[in-house]
Image 1 (cartoon, protein in one colour):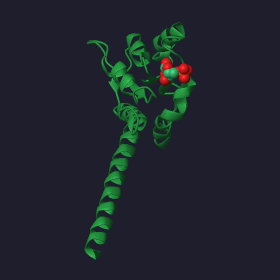
Image 2 (cartoon, helix red, strand yellow; image 1 turned 180 degrees about the vertical axis):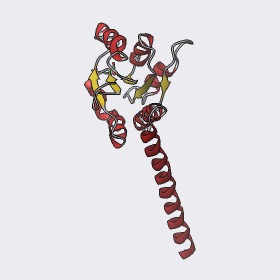
Image 3 (tube, helix red, strand yellow; image 1 turned 90 degrees about the vertical axis):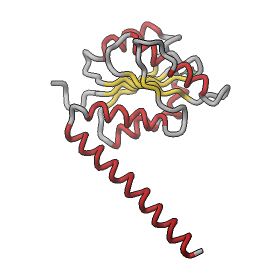
Image 4 (cartoon, helix red, strand yellow; image 1 turned 90 degrees about the horizontal axis):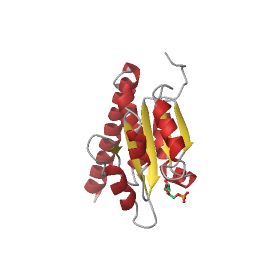
Length: 172
Ligand code: RP5
C-alpha cells in the first residue's frame, strides 16, 4: 500500500510554456481529489530524464501518466515506450497550426505502443484528467461513485438549460 497522498497520476509536459494551456487537466483531477504530481521534461531536450521518469513511475505508485507537448509532440509516445502504465497524450495548441501538428504527432502512434490522445485545445486537457479518473475508478468504488454523481450533475445542467430555452421560446 502506498501513502494516502502519494501521487497516482503523473502529469508531464514538454515545456513550462505548455502549463497555461493545459491547467484544466489538474483542475479536473482536483475535483475528484486525485493525488498528482506535475513535471516539466522534454523528449528532445531531456530525453534521459524522460526515460528515467517513465521507467520508474509504476514502481513509485503512479497508475496513469498524462503527457502534454506541442509541435513535434513526441513526449507521450516516448513515455509510452518506457512503461506499461496507461499513457494519455494532450496535444498542446500551437501558433503554427493551432495544435494540428501536436495532434498528429501524438495520435499517430505505431501499433503496439498505445497512447490515448485527447482533443487539441478546448476540452482536451480536462478530458485527459477525467479519463485518468475513470481508469483509477476501475479499482476504486468511491471514485466510481463520484463519477456517477458527476454524470448526473452534467445531465441536470443540460436539462436546466433545455427548460430555460423552452421557456424563452414560449415567451417569444
Ligand atoms: C514542445 O515544444 C513543448 O511541449 C512545447 O509545446 C513546445 C515549445 O517549447 P518552448 O520552446 O516554449 O520551451 O516540446
